[in-house]
Length: 92
Image (cartoon, rainbow, N blue to C red):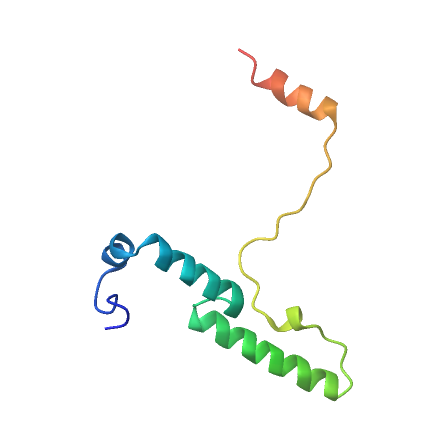
């Protein structure tokens, strides 16, 4: 049992976590990164791939070797007229 949390459900662990413990965990995550082992392994492999690529003359970046998650959001420029038309279309 780790800090009285091991073997409990997430809900039970959250209910018994004190404010000071939560602050400690937040400081740990800020200093050391995510607690998700899968993400940490992915980042480690991406770092290794980047180093190997650069050593062999490649120009790839670290982000090139990270998995893409979710849909990329395309930013659209709008004008005041576009907003006015949108508001007019929902007018009753």
